[in-house]
Image (cartoon, rainbow, N blue to C red; front, side, top):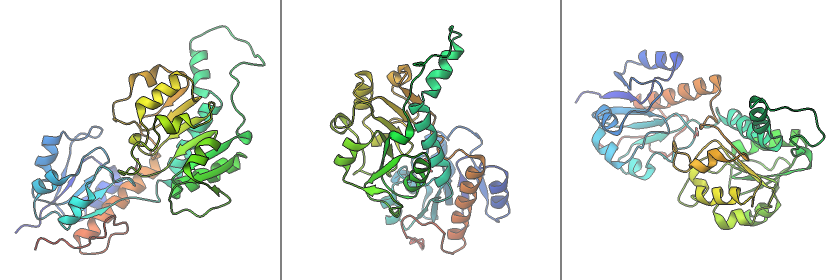
Length: 326
Ligand code: GLV
């Protein structure tokens, strides 16, 4: 039986692609640099593959694994989140799943801090105001925002990215509290239950993975229990928030604002979010630093090649290191 090929769902940039080309594995690369393969093209491309390197936009599920067939040994995600991958279905077939933690921690925390600053100091609103060309002069009440050093940041999901954001926020003088599980050390951050955190935070930032337990972690009831001038930041995964409930709360000014890098039905965005002045949106660019993206892609390539070459990958998600279809 031939060894199978390595299917890559997007061009990963010069350095990672060179590593792949020198690996000795036959490569099949989805030709569009920016858009994901359509489902039919994806299923076709993975047929007979020994490995897949995927971005978070592709659903890696039982149907796809069956389409790939028994040679498939590894699905290597170019992301830390693996909610697009059916880990159980992969494990049942002996397929190793890997991801790229650590290398994107700082970049994602930077963006969360950027959204926090943009909202608290109304940077995007003020920029739009000037671009409209309206007459203005310096005024004591012009675009009054919030002083960071007076605010409490509540972090939900205190792992690596939550901890990196805490470090940044503390440098701005914020008090930081955290709820939920996570690997991070306390680092001077007060831990408290989620309901207490919701009532305490002036800025709430989500850093939990998306699982069945965390889906709609913030729904109408949780949002209603927040301070009326609180803001919500989400650079994790859209479905952590019930987007309809968020829109209702924002429109009714039951909370002050939201900074969203991710959306419940990505790439679709609730149209009302785009109409609201108290919302800042970015297109899922948390890890979009040039160097970070190269590091992520290199790590994903190395994870995939390690499994294909019979070695332990640096970042297994499901602990399956051997292909069980002999
Ligand atoms: C980005 O969202 C990632 O999970 O890496």
